Length: 232
Image 1 (tube, helix red, strand yellow):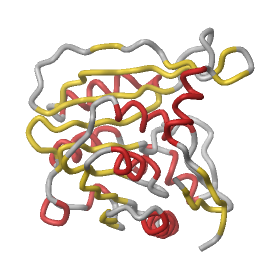
Image 2 (cartoon, rainbow, N blue to C red):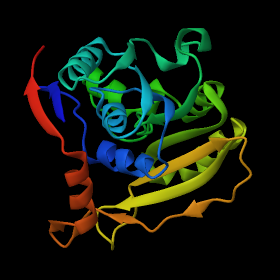
Image 3 (cartoon, helix red, strand yellow):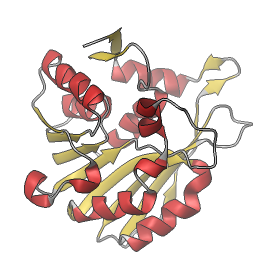
């Protein structure tokens, strides 16, 4: 798939491709909402591979314009809502079988970018985890799936926010840059109206020495993304 991305500022990275691969394990079907879609990579890849009715939400006009272009060039049917996720209503979008998101997840105590565009894409002051989970729960159908990635060091906050939103964490997978290093990312699948116990998957290791691991290479091959940096 071809994805147009901005020349400068935030662009999708391996986190989004790892999340696409993780979400694929749940064979999504029916209606899917991609929250904070950016240029649209996660939702469009899933809609390419699975029978989905796709809706995407993006509040930044710059990224929404790229998402619209990527919808057109890849000839995938999708509805784009340019609005803050916390401000949308069920009347506008309906409710969903699946919600996926690579949200802004860096906390306020890390060094922050002065670029307003990058800041909105990276830092969870723009979408606090508690509000993120509560709003997602309100837009899920019964037994609906909520799949997202987040800063691994904030797992206690994730668990608390999901519990408060009455979502059960069913599956989690940690991502490590190397097997000897702490996890930087966690991918989570939670579900509405679930009583399942949590399964912790084997870790995803990005690099084997100085080269990409076989699993990561397989994810990139499955995604088959090609990017063009441009201004639109």
